Amino acid sequence: MKMKRTLSIILLSLIAGLGVRDVHTQTPTVTAPCRIGQQAPAIGFWTWAANAHVKVYIASADFKTKEIPYLLKAFQNWNSASESTASGVTFEYVGDAKQELSCDNCLTVMRGPVFDKAKRHATELKAFSAHRDQIINYASIIIDPRLTNPQAILDAVAHELGHNLGLLDCYTCKKKSTLMNQFKVMNVPNDMAMPTACDIAQVREAYKELKVRVRPSPPSRNLIDEGEEPVDDDTPIVIPKP
Image (spheres, rainbow, N blue to C red):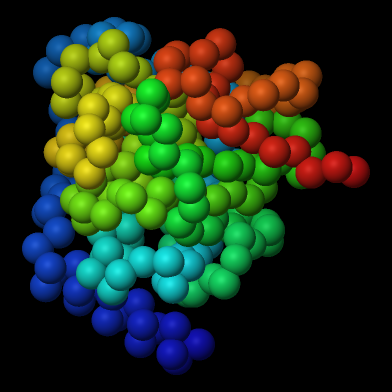
């Protein structure tokens, strides 16, 4: 336990030392209407349970030392918006992982081949629902080995965390209006590392709906990201067999 705390302190120090983009903890203000498809992403399906404390594990052997603080910054940015989104979901870095973990409320960050030249996807979220409903029990964020620009990694992980909280991609949205815009070029940051006011508003709507009902999983089908706004969600979900 002492070693984990020490590692966390070292990594947080690296965040400051490496010049990771500063994040204001104030809630962004809405300067224009949050129109879905224009300034705001649509609400998807899959989410962590309300008030979930998600334990984050990083396969540190997959990453360079200088990259890890950028991974952690993405989680910190979403944590700063947790109260504003009314989701209550928080992410805590716990330690190293050798492989994808399947413990309850665990999220593993690791590398793997996911890049698609046609769709320009270099990261992928895989989530698992033990109860065959929309609640994520454990998940992993896969980062392609060719995504090496630390700032681009930060932006991409922040984007994937939006999917963790019920947001869909929004490739028609105005540039810099949402984290859920498309990445145009591999290894080029989109300069969007924290949720916008419209992202926060949409996550709030997703969790407001979650209070009303928890939907069952749709019939089994291929849920791999299509690179567009699909009917349900664009994050691949694997439901464990009974």
